[in-house]
Image (cartoon, rainbow, N blue to C red; front, side):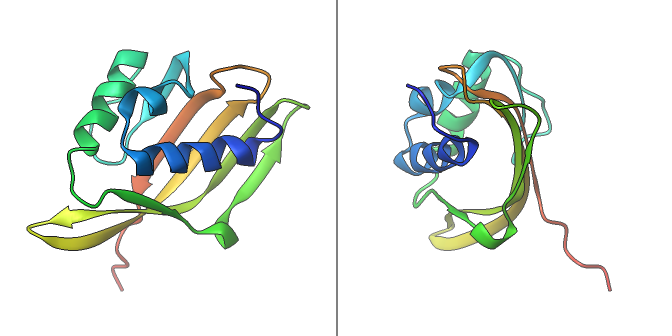
Length: 130
């Protein structure tokens, strides 16, 4: 699959997470990609690890991701190498209640590659202490 721009990679990632197929999600990550996931303390550095992480996440009822488009930022380093950062919210049920987990993210993508995600970091937005 070829991508016209970095945003298309992100939109495809959101769509695949919402569909819940971990292998489809993992297919977006380069073989040497690094994933610093939202809901695990462990960094993932293999396609199998990415698939396992999203497979575990997909067991949550009502799983979805909502992108906060106004927070999206793009930096371009070449015609094909870009970073995207911003906020999305994971949503899934906990004890039969749909909860939302606003999270910050950054992706480094190379749109010239079939598996364009090179690095992905995601962490829950901290609660304000004031």
